[in-house]
Image (cartoon, rainbow, N blue to C red; front, side):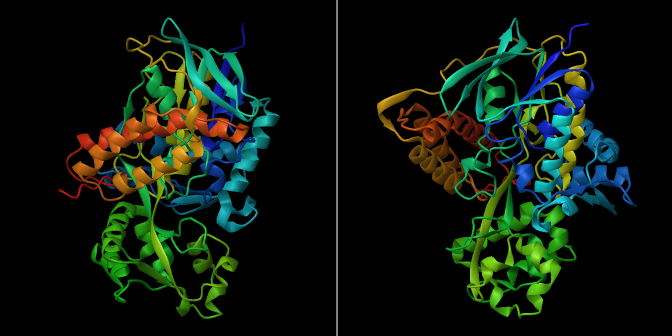
Length: 495
């Protein structure tokens, strides 16, 4: 029997899990990644926290809460898979050697990390080692530019080594898109620099449907003080530090309790959408502050506070005063449409993780992202290694355009990227309106049409990423203009 060739695009938690499962199921697996394996991914930057029905939380409770937080527009078949299979998926990884600690309704990998604030780094490091032991091969520093099809079935991918500009053509029986999200369309995002929506773009240009792209989750609290990293703080920070407007009103914790949540930590799991909108509305009237000057020396040793800060306390040695905070982009709930076997509309093409839509609906429960990448990563890997051929569900109409064109009269990709990020943040952020969305669409189209000037390998990488950025931004704007009413993370000021 001929060994099936499987290509996985992306080397975060979803991609590595899928690659390992496909290899252990007998496939010849190659992972293609823009950086070194595992690095530069949202998994590596994450907290390593899973929301999962264990230790007293029932599967039905998890299922119901996920639908409730997602405002009921989730794909219930995908939510059922997540609720029913996430526990077994984590136990599967534990069998392979991943160190996981379980508590009621959750699990974490913090014990494996360099520090507790970066539990995802320890997790992804273990996944890389497990994948390598499972004979998974890696092609690093490479951007996949298109999916190759023959008679509407996957035949492989085209790619470019961005350090040399060398093109690559790789054949495969199945391809798994596991590229993560596209947070870098925003000026303020906690996503790593390489999260540029590549998977959304690859799928869209192959004719695959994207769903729920208007639903972008913002973290309510992000550091916005000059001198501090552009990074999130846990919403539970309000349980340790006063958060006020410039008049000193503690509006944030008051609203959280009026909504029926015990504290900021609970709101962080179930109400990031409402908290972000509240914060953005308040910020329109003036700055919002976290009062670090209230924290006495002993309090700085409190682990709850340290975890809520999400960055090392030494960053705050010179900030024992009120510091500016503001919402920050965190996660994309929409993405590639899949069924409960991670199949897309194209024969041989699978997808998993944040690159997909349907699991989260209009808003995501905190911790479900890590459970998602593991559960659906395993499913995608097993199915890709199995029968990777089925009837394509639509007539394939690819968008034909070269991945990057350089012109001496063009704009440097870094400049164009910054212009796009500012426009998307200003017009498609936590607060939206029709005029702004239409203007965003216009600015995105203008960005797509501008020529690029490439003078270095890093500019080549940035140029190759522009397609993903513009395609992702366009999908968010298109979804936002069609959904006239507010729902979850999509807030229309007119309604």
